[in-house]
Image (cartoon, rainbow, N blue to C red; front, side):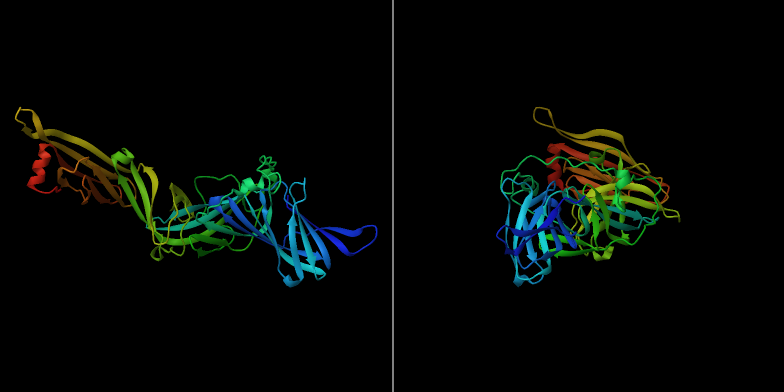
Length: 456
């Protein structure tokens, strides 16, 4: 139910000895409305157009915002036609009257005049989320972006053009606090009472989010053509304009599609690192926000990506995993952690340990020695696809040497105390390799440094 109310009070030019003639006219609904939602600051700029029927002379427009989160001090009105003949002289707030403003309009013409009314409100927000669908060989992905706009402002917005701002904005006063003041220029008052909950099952408008979601097999078929979202840069902010108009009632959320890109090249990678992931193998998915990856037109707002894999030729999906990510600028890489898996297994076993090359000080105390560890690594791929696995080993010291044997694939030194093995395994296959790690303790570190630089 609409809560913003406008009443036109038309005062006749001729005044009798008794009283002036006063007409009170409730205005028609908005012709258009535009919402620009600054998500980071809980602030929305509303611009709405209405047609006023004015009499020549003095007119008064009454504006009521009861039970909304509108900041009344931000109200403005401009004439969109015959501006030189329309004087919107002032906006007054009657004393001891809450949630009511009165515009004084001096019109040089009689008839319909289009005006634009703008104000700031709180309670409108948006969030981004994404769906990635891997093809069966998992080399490319269909990436679909969505935004969910939520309206808790206390006001219904019918057929609104919606624009979304990506980026940080800083304000001195919170719009919600300004809206809750008992009088427009008074102190912040008590929080408005919660609006009565609606009967979701009976009053859900078409296309509104809230229906129960079924997990498991999900059909790829989508009803209707998705709305296009136009994007343009605004200095440190980015503006997304959703194609067409949408009705966003108070208390509801609405899902809108922002983009749909097919055949985005992706890299699947499995990582094993005991210090970070324990004994689990974790799957990662990476791509780049650039032209080569069918993206790169705009930054990608931060959100959550749920990844599925196409199964068979009937358009069904199997769930792979999900990951949250932050804002991705153009030309930046993104690597998404999809969580631990059970179909790729890495087992690390300590096969032998000994100490050697002891050094003694003048008091015959041990002052240095070598720790020698022998590890066996087995990697198993139970999937029906080939996989790439990274195994990172952290030694905790820059003084070490490594001897390798077996099918260890590619090998590289990451930093002073870390190495990485990279293996490619065909479907339903396994590989084993061993390495002997020698770390130097005490004065043996100094000896190794003199003998040669640290090498692997």
